[in-house]
Image (cartoon, rainbow, N blue to C red; front, side, top):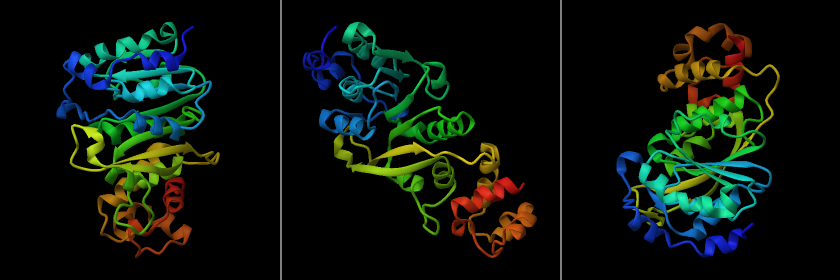
Length: 279
């Protein structure tokens, strides 16, 4: 079996791959390619020890991060790609170790259930297409709630403003539904930021890599839909006091001893979980 390092050294530069397969980034697909392998290696390292794990990558494009994952100790790399041009460009990567470690799945990540593609320990490491990043994250968080152990970790690239929403604290302008659901299910930390110049073509905004580690939830934790409902009601009328935005939860607010004149942004993540449990 071939050595991954030897295999990677013999691959053509990513810019040559883009030219050969006419893989010009399409705005409609949210494509912004990372061509600096030092950066993709850094992302892969943030995922930690991947030994024994099936690692999913979403929207690999020309395969920069895919190469870094091949260089890791991941047991298997499953790359889900929607663009047929990129699917063709990625095929040479399946020659690594006879194609045993790398699988290219041509499909829409919003419709593909990753849990159906691999058994055992799983992780997600991806430079997400920005136009579908938030719904993808929400769907994976829901799977983590419904199937404990679904993913061991997620290491994901977002627009910086989305990363700020994910990690925002109560009382801040960025604190909202995504903050609560993310922080309820996982410990979330920003690993590092990247300027637009790191990408080809450069997006208009900066980006951030966020690492997610699933929490062990209490046995009486509410279901995902209940938390979605209470946060939607609260932040759908963000400037209202909770006695107005959460009037359907008045009895629970009283039972929890919460100040009804507070606004949604003043409640902690645990406050929202307690409200969801109380209904």
